[in-house]
Length: 382
Ligand code: GLY
Image (tube, rainbow, N blue to C red; front, top):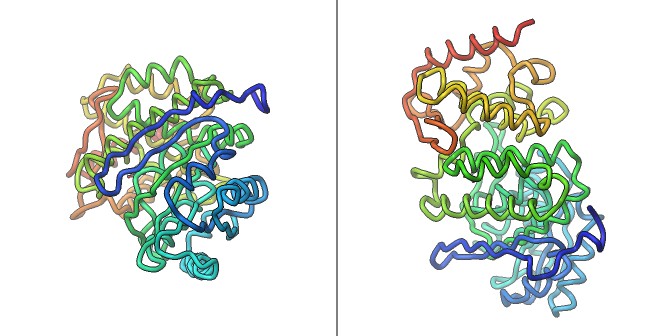
């Protein structure tokens, strides 16, 4: 679906509140929000905005957004950074901070992040530190960023010591998730974001997982199911963030599938040709459920159902599907040990007692992980 025929009336815009006291904000989800972004952003009361975008997204949407802001009487500058994970760097942070200052963004003005997770994390962090903090708005343009990274206030850049190790919690003042922008998203990126959608069902909402099994094709095709999936994901994430903004407890549930997934990303050296984050998460979700089943915590049938659904959408579900190989068991364990979710030498996993019944499991013995991974790797051998 694309073009005017696909446009839905303004009434179909869903508002998801994130009630965080003096940092509360709304997430708006719906088609064609970009065209009315100026009015919604102007309602925040700023006089100027610096739109931070990347070289892929900027040419498609930055001018539309800038015009929409100007029509509301806001000054708008566009700051374009290179596309790709390498942009989450100290050098890009300096570039963006200086550009925001050159655009004369004062306290009370705004940084607007227009792009995927890289732009959102970088622009959000720049907003957190420029003039000791200015407000920012997220306009996420990928499914992954609409359902995960634009919500919850984690911002930051990568260091040579690892990903996302330098950053700040800085909540946006507004999130505009225009689901029509996903019409042109490559299928691989759509799938990768969808792994995070499924994750919310697996964490604590079996009914949403069942809904995903039934409606995923509509999500991919851009029907009303897509808006529902994005809105429900944002509701689920907002509920966790409101309970535990700074990840002292429950927010770790959002890492379901990520301990294995991050290890695979490390092993594939973050080369997107081999594996993108959401693909690592898809394999990680399956591993988390099969590991839970192997520990006798979760019915095998639930693990099989998770795998069947992710595979149906075209996502990878097995270690053998990692392009160029998933490494040895020792390499996988080493990669997990470097993950920031490792405390005192023990591995913390998010495990499950079934679909929608995930829980934080600290102190998982490395030996049991090793035995499980050996079984998984051997099962993958022809
Ligand atoms: N993406 C995980 C979190 O925001 O906590």
